[in-house]
Image: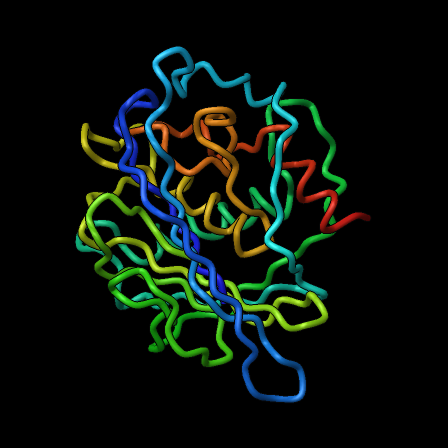
Length: 254
């Protein structure tokens, strides 16, 4: 299992703390050994001569990275609605979650790129089970359910996705935990300063859920799969860039 997170970014050029990236791979028991481990990815500060906001326009940027797995059928997911932050409403949040899944499976973009991505999803309803992600942003024990929910996470982290795949490259479980300690907004019109929009964050996390990895913030910071948000009330990364679409087409060709 691999854990992937999206960092909060007030401005693209803001300095972000650099940390060591540690990846551990170890087989688990069972007929088909699963890859397990943890990955923390936080981008270092941009060099003075290359601020993050100097990255190519999203429709000009062809970069993408892959996690090494893909779904071989629809991704059926559940929502832990009891964790919905106060004041948002579970129905309204669910609408945003479904739209975020559609952004990935439908390859939604402003670049004129056709949807030639075969990935699909299926909403299976609400659940009392929590995502298998700890409050310290680590992957917890797998339970066979693909769950999205809110819960406390360390400061500066918007959300964490844990991805599990088997030895043949098939994804077997994903879990997404969204930071309940932050103030979230569901639309640009309702967003106040210091709030983060849920849709671009979820589109990024669901990109992980379908096998897309991070791209470097300084070089590719305008793509959806970059590591830091565009800041409060920015909805730009709800639509995919060229590189994001290229990665999905590679994983899920028609």
